[in-house]
Image (cartoon, rainbow, N blue to C red; front, top):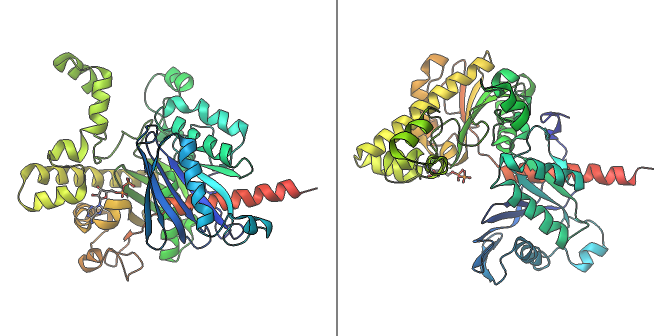
Length: 428
Ligand code: ADP
């Protein structure tokens, strides 16, 4: 089954709620929502997980917020505490369970899993074999996959009967052809160690491409899109007829665009050069490229685009340069993605910067006039509200803003796969 075939358009499974979890190395983000409508019931985050100072912040919609300290900061303790909020929210109670699945009944847990390697091309129901395969991909994401697994195992311990689904950041890009995913390095690095481009942000790209097609009123199966997911991590992807054919992130989420703290592309010769000149180790270089580079490294001010924009507007030259490098590299990447599409129908901006920074979008569009893009300044200033996302003037190519919702995509996959699993179990 391909990632595009599994997107489950139109089918969100039975009524009920899904617990969506993003378990990181020191934090757990969660949401409880209705997959059909996207309506949130609970959301929140545990920080300093793994320490005695673990704090859990829970928002019960619309606006009741509590913060709790957990003496024991294990993933299990955090998950139990989150699940403990369910009866209070009016579901998961004995009565609700006895009366069968109702609209307020928890039907499954969906986990964001960062790396699915080449094994996972779509979201899957979690079983022992899936857990083993995620563990086997852990060398590709040593900080993330073990934490994602800890979340899965904690839910299993607390609610052994609750179906769980793994949704991979990499799965959507498994449709990339070898010419896009292979590096020009010795074959053995690929066959033995899995050195290839995987790409990330796949769940967001899947959600946003479907939504963009709906807003454009055209079938996704005949659209050629370049999507720019610009959050703390930034990447661009080429989506042809609903399938990813290229993207800027690679083996790791360090490749490609300038990001908040990550460098994006650098000359690979930089490692030997700085080891020689500055005596830096591979670990030190890697950490610097991940945490002290990007907007932060260039501007010297912040990794946060809002702060960099404000400081540049006050005349700070380093902040101005950071914005220029960011926009130049982004425009170049968008233009490069058109090679895999052969025709361009729309450029779509999403995530924190993509949805909110009219300035960056304007800077990028002004560099892409040769592709047939002209900014509609008024629509751009309104972030495409009232124009079905469109921020360009009439022309052969549309530029648009489409808000992403990865949690909703995970919830929908979870609802669809748990419903399919239940049908299988009840089949004669
Ligand atoms: P994450 O990747 O962690 O989910 P987000 O998608 O929330 O992050 O994106 C965070 C980025 O979005 C930050 O750089 C932040 O400065 C930027 N951002 C949010 N709002 C604005 C805004 N109004 N103008 C410019 N940048 C913004």
